[in-house]
Amino acid sequence: MWKRIGIFLFCCALFMSIWKDLTIGSPVPATPTETTTEEPETDEKQEMTQETFQPVLLQVKQGDTLLSVANELNNHDLRVTMEQVIVDFEELNPGKDPYALDAGSAYYFPHYPR
Image 1 (cartoon, helix red, strand yellow):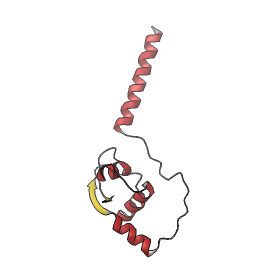
Image 2 (tube, helix red, strand yellow; image 1 turned 135 degrees about the horizontal axis):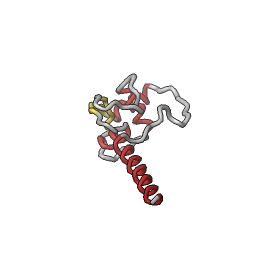
Image 3 (spheres, helix red, strand yellow; image 1 turned 120 degrees about the horizontal axis):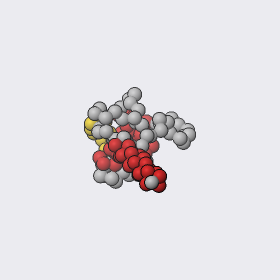
Image 4 (cartoon, one colour; image 1 turned 90 degrees about the horizontal axis):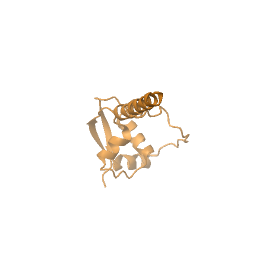
């Protein structure tokens, strides 16, 4: 009898864990774990960045992340690094945290045409 109760409790805990992960999603760290040295952007680099993407205004849903929206917007063919997507997102949405998107809010996302 205790074995059945233990198996039942284990299955309930497993189900709740999966349910929470699917409905809420996994938390994204507030700060990147890698330390990068920022080099000053030149005018040429800024022009190249501005020419390589087009801003698209989208409303985010529950569980959306910057990477998931950027991948979907670019047909899962993202040809730039995630760091570049974050930089472009911050440029389009000054003062907004790319790691914590508010469900129901509208943000500008970078679209990288071919």
